[in-house]
Image (cartoon, rainbow, N blue to C red; front, side, top):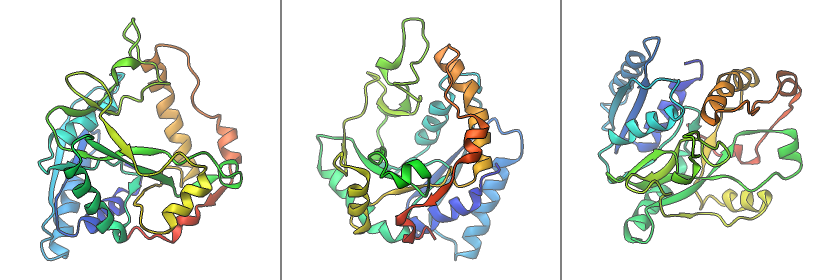
Length: 268
């Protein structure tokens, strides 16, 4: 766990402000990660007047040779949740505490709108490479960050991403889609932002009315290289091919990162 996960957990706890619950999935950990996380939660609550947020650490035993291992790990975390609505985040994703009210407003809207089961919220890379930032970039990615907690909703491979030989088309699935268990289809969802150019979407987010999720995974260039080294064989195993998805190390070394203009929004 080389990523600064303690700061991320503190961010999530601060955002919830004593409400709700957090379920962490720790998969076949080779170190004492589960104990470290449990001890962190315990100390945080002691230092913050017994903060009321319920915390859970779910231990899973899913092989990394399983082509869909990451989706199954996330599904295990969701299965441990008991609240009526869920938000699933990776350890390199953080929330903006000042936007707490907007998120709770979204849950109320989702509760009333029975035609959908999820709301897709934009994710913003805190630091972008030069080509993305200077050229305006593509539209912001929106993900299923808020959805109903239902026995029929999970994370996994969308049905139409499977090939006849059982392999997974990595252009159609990363094994973590929000799907219905009974059909394998994507969960019915609505996006917060229209598919406009990046700079127009950022202007909408700058108003503070539209919540978003911070992605910090590319903040450390060396960490990005390690991520690429880890995921390359995973993609090949999943796709059952010699697909090349990782950037070369020398390409990553040349990347110049620029801070996103929305960094004025604090995550602590």
